[in-house]
Image 1 (spheres, protein in one colour):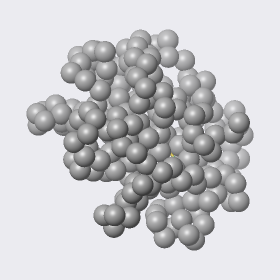
Image 2 (tube, helix red, strand yellow; image 1 turned 90 degrees about the vertical axis):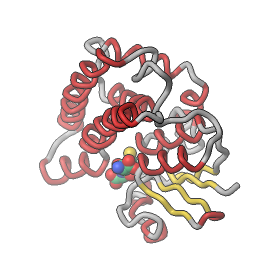
Image 3 (cartoon, rainbow, N blue to C red; image 1 turned 135 degrees about the vertical axis):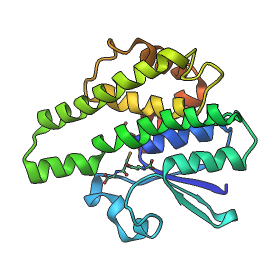
Image 4 (tube, rainbow, N blue to C red; image 1 turned 135 degrees about the horizontal axis):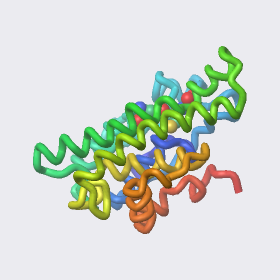
Amino acid sequence: MALKLYGYWRSSASYRVRIALNLKQLDYEYVPVHLINEGGEQHHQAYQRLNPAQLVPVLVDDDEDLILNQSLSIIEFLDERYTSGCSLIPDHPLERARVRALAQDLACDMQPLGNLRVLQQLEQRFAADEQAKAAWVRHWNEQGLSAIEQRLQTQAGKYCFDFDVTLADVCLVPQIYAALRFGVSLDAYPLVSKIYHNCEQLDAFAQARPERQSDAPA
Ligand SMILES: N[C@@H](CCC(=O)N[C@@H](CS)C(=O)NCC(=O)O)C(=O)O
């Protein structure tokens, strides 16, 4: 098998790539990188050779001499390189731009604020306890989701864009999974909630769920 995904079961960015690989109907080998055990395997020298930024995911394709980080770049690469499965980025320039903008709202503006290394700094440098860290994560998710709910009012259908599943849905589902984990209620975001549940009905999303990965605790 040529494609290898280095990831972690509960990492949102790895979850995005797993969904995309499934939607593109691509076989891949999943290589777990434990973000907590042994000081965090993302910091080990062997992994830093793949990604000096010490973050998952990384996609490796030995056949193509490819080592690629950044989930959005990985997903766009897969979408352009492989015609199998569904297309995750629409053809029309305006639709493409809108899909990318929503994906970036989620993956660039929301997710990094709840990242493990940010929460570790809050704890180590600013004495934040579990409650304070959860409040921090909830705050940024609620602020981000309010904006996303408003945006969806003008464009959503069954999914974030009524035409089909796109990169935006691939980014939405892992963000909601993470938000729910920290106690965010979806009551104030009915469109977000509907789209999350619609995506969850699809096999590609269900198979990518964190609990279903080989490195998830039993
Ligand atoms: N922008 C990157 C973000 C990657 C990222 O934040 N990865 C997290 C897991 S979701 C990570 O590896 N965290 C490890 C750490 O914080 O030490 C992407 O989309 O791939």
